[in-house]
Structures are given as structure tokens and as C-alpha cells.
Image (cartoon, rainbow, N blue to C red; front, side, top):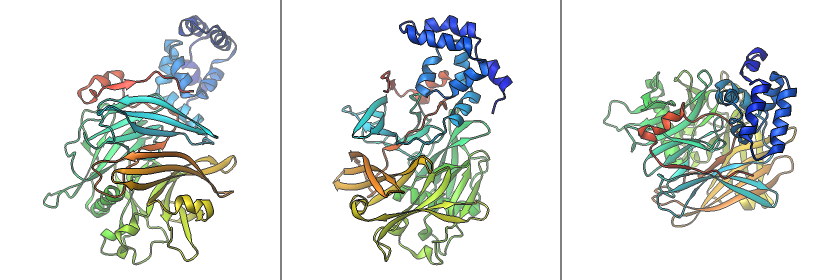
Length: 466
């Protein structure tokens, strides 16, 4: 946190703000008068507290007020403070949705806001280099407001900030066709994101697993500082295979990326259920198995492993157990939260019993995934659940629900039919994620957009989100 002395030094003087406000808002006299009056009457530290509570949309407009404000809003200090100040769980989910266009080589990214009986869908930007029906969202939960996208045809990764409508294409990887699993994390020390890619090698190669990292501003991927120690190689191989076949992405929380392993790939019960990667230190670790993993866990079938996945809820690492039609008392979904990394203790946070309307909606789809939560225990918490079911051939029915654990009410908020060509497995990737407000940049400078690996035509849309 910045002290008050630092805060006041970056806020423009009232005279400077008043002078430039007229240029920034020439067509709106009321807004000009309000901002000018605030700049005269409010102390600098109070003005900063007001700015920290503005939505990203307003901050982007206020960058034109003066150079001092433009510099302030783009600083890492302000971005961090703004995220911490606005870290209040929304009461209603807002989604980022990837949709194909009528053009062959074009994909749109939209925001979707359900509101009662109505909904709002706003176009954010268009990626003209991505083949329609080939773009997927890698992780269903954003990382500091950033979302990782993957174009399977190119293949290419993109990092986007839905709030600022910025997007950048990452440089191509030297091993694009190998089985791999990527995740997006945030380095609290440098206050920059990192994209981490675990890659399974071929059986005749010296390295059976490798880990590469991309950081903003770099022109290529590089090996992780700590590499993949031999003792973690089987865990990493299992995590990549699990992610590829069952579409189980990693999650980021507490400074670590976490991959869930598949115990059926081990000869005996593994001592850990999750392999973790410190985004700051670039080293691997593990999380102990939950209590429901028995001594013969490695003997279960592959299909049973696909019924577990990771999710982040209330800034806590969680495992979801899909127990539909597998318990004596009926069908349930269980959400277990990790209490402590050191002890490896887990506790049951939520149990969703499938009966009535809840069973009708969640009982039949092949894939049911918890992707996060909105609200809190004080204001009312809702769990966000996504489902996927094959209709015919390449067509899949995707739905998103909110579930209120207090009154046990399930509400559908989004229903779409997706086409997944070239799908060799029964589980398609996701094309939506939760939406999080953030000023986190996707690249270091504007000049980086002109570098060779960002030559994809990114059409930014000026449509204002209502």
C-alpha cells in the first residue's frame, strides 16, 4: 500500500485538473463542472480515494484529464490499489463469452450480464486472426482480471483484459503440437502476469516433461527457472494427460498454479493430489491428497477421475467431487476446501444435493463443472456452475447456472449451442469465464503491439458498455 505522502505526489493539482477538464469533456458541461468542483474542494489524498473506487470504464475516460492522471492510472501502484479496493465479490455473475462470427477467420469476445428477466450482451473486441469455433477460454476464472485464450488451429495463446479491452497474442512456442497444459498466474513481486506451459515430451526424448514460461515483453518462451525436478516428473506428466483428455485446467490462487493429477496413471496411491507451481519462484511443490482419496485410489477407472476438478472459491483452493448417481442416498456435488498447505488438511465447504429441479438440470449433462462463486456469506453467496452435453455430431449444449446454497435454488443464466469441429474427445473446451474488473495491463508498453508476434489484426470496439 502506498502511504499518503506517495498518494498526494501523483495526483494532479487542482489547477491543472480544472484547466484540462474542459478539453477532456468539451460536450458535457455538467461533468466538466462536477470534476472541476471536486478538484478544487477535495484534498489530494481524498481525491485518490475517490478515484480508486471508480469503475475501470470511468478511469479509462479520465486518463484524458491530464498527464498526471494518465501516469497515475497506468502505474503499478494504482493498478494494485484499485484491484484491492474493488475486490468486493459481485452479487450477480458477469461472464466473458467467446463467440464465432459469420466470417471464417474471426472471433468475438463479449461480456454477458444477466439481470432478472433480461440480459445484456456487449461486444468487447474482435480477433480477426482466430478461426471461428477454434478459440477457447483456458481457465474459467480470471487472474487479476486477465483471461487466457487459446486458438487450437494456429495454435496460439492470447492474454486479454476484458475491462480495458486490451489483448495481446503470445509468441509461438517451439513445441506447438505436443500435449500440454497452460495456466495464467500473477507474480506479486513484479506485479506482472506469467503464462506457464507444462509439456509432455516423447518417450524417446531425454526430457519426458518440461515447463516453459512467458512474461510480458519477451519475444519468446523460456524454460522455468527451476525446471521440472525428476521427483515431480510423473506428477507433471499425469497432470498434463488429465488436463488434455478431461479438459481439467489449472487454477491460480495464493501465488501458485495448481494442476490436479489423475491417480489412475500411478502404480500405487500417490502421496499428493495436486502439483503446484510457484509463479514467483518458478519452483514445483505438491498438495496432499484429500481424505476421500482411499488406499486404492490409483485403481479407479479413468472415467471416475474426470468427475473431479479444481476451482477457486473465496480465495481458497477447492476440489469438486461429482457424485451424481454414485452415493447410496442419491446424487450430490461436494466442494472441499484446502485449509492449510503445510498440513494438507481439507474440509467439506458445500454439499449440493440433486433433487427436484436441481436434479433435472444437473443430473443429465455429461460434464458438470463449478467455475467459481459470486457474493459472500453476508450479502448472499451463489455458486456458479457450468454444464456441457453433446447434442448431435459437433453440436454441444452449454449452460451456466447460479446455485444459492441457503435456499437451494438453481437459476439458469446462459444457454448456448456451440460447434466444436475436430473434436476427438467427448469433452469440449470452455468458451466462457467469469468477468473481473481490473486495470492490469496485458503488455508492458504500447510499442510491444507492433512486434512481429502481435501482428494479428485486433479490432478494438468503441461500443460503450451500458
